[in-house]
Amino acid sequence: MRLYVEPMDATVVEVAADGRVRLENEDWTTPTLQEKRAIIYEAQKAVEELTEWIEILSLQDGRKAGLQG
Image (cartoon, rainbow, N blue to C red):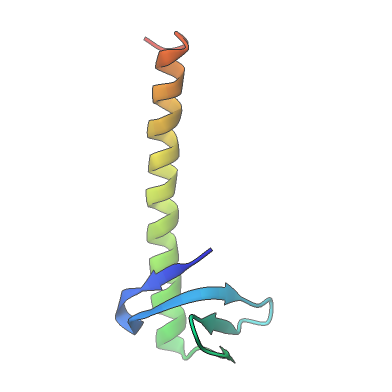
């Protein structure tokens, strides 16, 4: 998964169990407190948006199958 983090103007491509992150075209680094907060904020926004998309698409599938009115 890739996550663009606007305040950092960077894309996170991997997160290790020890908290290090790998940004696109860079090596593994330990993010600063501000970077961690920015990554978490953007990740939470992405989860909320994806959840909304899933709900919308699931509703549409249910309507097509005649499961919901």
